[in-house]
Length: 281
Image 1: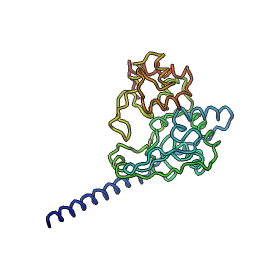
Image 2: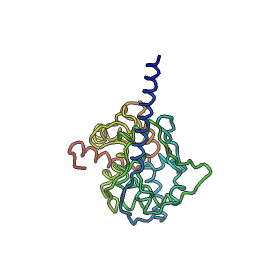
Image 3: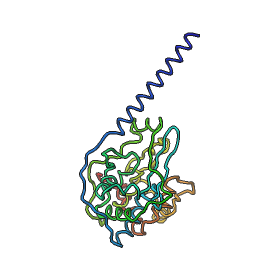
Image 4: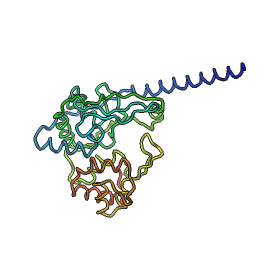
């Protein structure tokens, strides 16, 4: 009986030690600070800018994660993963300058210099100066409401393990890939600022935080569809078969429907070119 007791004590000690290492290691990652340039971009408050800013906030997913009216949304709440919430935009933006919002959106860096871990900066870093200004202009029209969701984030053991192993990686993006103006080649532009939030251009990859789910390469998908079917996919979330495409179906019905007919056609034309003649990205 003594050896059973000693084994149990040793096992508890090992588990406790592993949890301490897990917490300390993930906390070290979470508390790292990052220096980036402050870009002097100010909100576009013109009437046309506000309308386009609201449309862009749908296309790039701001309203998909933070809710259509910007009041926030709980994305995950689980004992193992933790609580991950996209905060009410108006309350968070109230303590940020326009330039700090640009840094948050493009580079994934908060006011205190630490990095976000849940935001698609891999796509948002491509937003043109003018379009970031339009989105921030729309953000400035929002007001706090009694229904705002607190933007608290806390990580459980699995969440911290994902952070420590890089499966839930830092969204810090140090390099500025953004043009001053939206390019005339809108297919490449909208594919980058929207679709790259989930997809890689040329490689299939596991879904972030859910490695059993494989997200197909974007160029391959675009080239596999006939134009009419691709249009249907982006408008309704229905692919070549009627099966539920999960997140893709929800995003298409909620956000991508704001793309114009010409923009959808341009996106597919760009993806077909990329599939046939890949360029350096």
